Image (cartoon, rainbow, N blue to C red):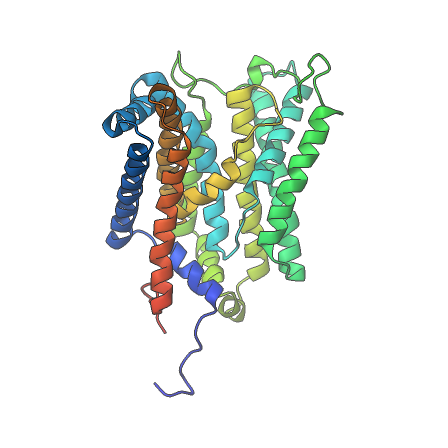
Length: 367
């Protein structure tokens, strides 16, 4: 190949996206398993370092996550918002967009769902639940679209925009729940209690497992099918890997980017709805302990695959719920579990960075 015909190296941003979206191969599955094993080993070292029994600590973790029907239900409930955010972030990342604003989008979706549910206290479930879902997804999509419009038409960095919008959403929700929309009968920053019709149905009687799990599974399956079998999914991947080539081929790059970010925000908003209608029964100021940020980690662990994100969310949910039980019964700080979670992703990122440093491209992306 002559110098005149040798293609220029792909921009660093596209090479990173290419490495991140490569999934499904045996090496990727093996890499994930090795990362989890090494992170758990590091966690065992930390448990031993604080003077606790390692087998007892991990036994408590497993029992807390899976030891009973209710414990398993708690794990699945914890996985629901992580899965919805993870699937949404996966779609935006495949388009080459770094959506780190899911936390704000989740809060806005939860706020919209709480306000609509409070405004329809006597409506039946067939009316109030769809209204809450639509309002939550619309609020999340609109909040995400602020950053995407600025990105697409003004070229501003979407990472900075979405981080700033997280702060705006947090303070806006705090202001509203402490003032204009606060439950007048309560001193707490929250909306009025939702009616029973505005709550998600319980899937297993006697547990806390709600219908949000069904929504999360449906979202992951539909997103996976759209990525693999629809023209939109093809456009999304092409735009993410090389937007200049996609534009030259006549693909609607701007429309694809805007739609990816809007859908990502809508799924984060849906996660907010699930927390309001399935867990809290109202909108509260501390609706999310950081699901919007943890969902990004879930998407990375799932290799930006919707189904992979669903599985990663279950893993993170088990660690989170089991970690609380481990802290209560054995006295191991729950922060050890957080370290394990993020070590998994750091190890996977390190593998990708090593490939990037060596100039290794995913199959089909070599020059």
